[in-house]
Amino acid sequence: MGQLESKVALVTGASRGIGKSIALKFASEGANVAFTYSRENNQIEEVVKELEGYGIKAKAYRSNAADFSECEQLIKDITNDFGSLEVIVNNAGITKDNLLMRMSEEDFDKVISVNLKSVFNTTKSALRGFLKSRKGSIINISSVVGVNGNPGQSNYSASKAGIHGFTKSMAKELGSRNIRVNAIAPGFIATEMTEVLGEDVIENWTKGIPLKRAGNPEDVANLCVFLASDNSSYITGQVINVCGGMST
Ligand code: NAD
Image 1 (cartoon, rainbow, N blue to C red):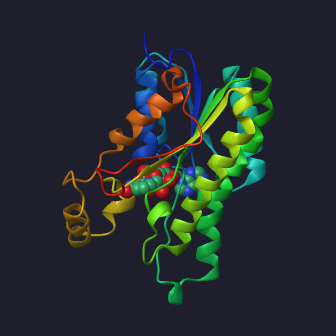
Image 2: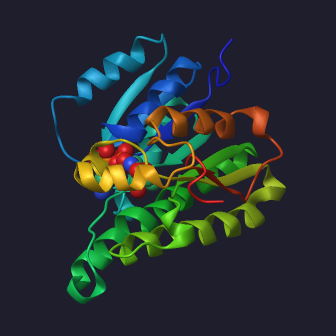
């Protein structure tokens, strides 16, 4: 029996990268998986089929994580389609890197909306259902730069640090109702998001990682399974690094 047998999980932004890997790992552990994507593309149906290959129910929803009313509708639709919702992984995220001198107000606002406001949007929308069933696990994907900061990423690191504050507050607000809220802070993970940095930058980053390699999306997904499962039933309000020792 899988660790997530018959749980219903939402993973935001799971058309590729870390989100896709989490969705697949959840399905392989027996969870039914709802996932979102932001832009129409022909890979969505393939992801749904891949998930269904594990013998679970899977469905894709086009939904903008930054938009509150879309998230409210999304949670209603998932609850109707699947009958319940127990796990949310807030994974959708973007970067719009620049030194502050050159960063536009628009790029600051966009990153805060997609990365941080999105976490408020799904959590608030799902709250009533979670409180009623007196269970739930919310997992927010942040970043080690939310702890340490990074030049050129003031918008991104502020959004991820904001996730940490939100996560800890929610854990305190909801713990008595058996709703757990944790954050995962990945270090340098090889995905399309980091591919754009170029070989030189990637090589430089890797040198500074004690385990001497970039992480894989599966490294993050493995921890997600644990935090979504009942094996982590005494863990809440934590920010857990998955970074090969880059941040201690
Ligand atoms: P990615 O760009 O490959 O995937 C991001 C996903 O989010 C995509 O599926 C995209 O469609 C979706 N998305 C973007 N905007 C959205 C919106 N408005 N509404 C719904 N979905 C939206 O990136 P990734 O590397 O897989 O990153 C996933 C998460 O992990 C992000 O939150 C990112 O900040 C975080 N993270 C990544 C790394 C890394 O090194 N790759 C490190 C630390 C944290």
